[in-house]
Amino acid sequence: MKSATSFSRSGTSDWLIQRVSAVILAVYFVVVLGWLLLAGEVTYSAWHDFMTCTIMRIFSLSALLSLAGHSWVGLWTVTTDYMTTRQMGASANFLRLIAQIGMAIVIFVYVVWGIMILWGN
Image 1 (cartoon, helix red, strand yellow):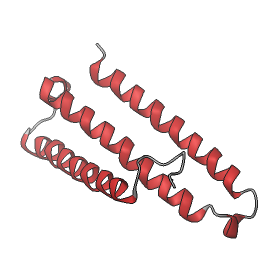
Image 2 (tube, rainbow, N blue to C red):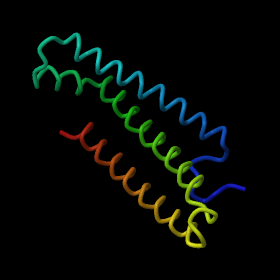
Image 3 (cartoon, rainbow, N blue to C red):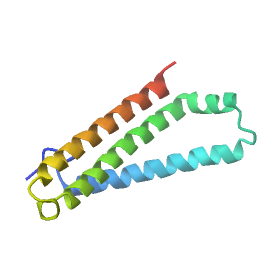
């Protein structure tokens, strides 16, 4: 049985999303940190040039989407594991749904805002 608020069809898919997104985020962190360490003096124009080149915009977008997927799977797992009727009583399903809707809205706003920053003027 698939939950209506699950990100994917199975635990294997959720596991894969978590692992792939974690690798993308780790590589992104290493690339940005490496640039900061090798750039010497970091000026606005140097940072702007680095972050606005097409390959870095695409990489930043993939990191942003990876962060969204990673966050959703992780937070969905936590809410379904710990917001149960055994621990919270009869209102657990309603509270879990409200928490998941709130998280989905925050993640959606974060992604839209990030896309506007990356691809805006």
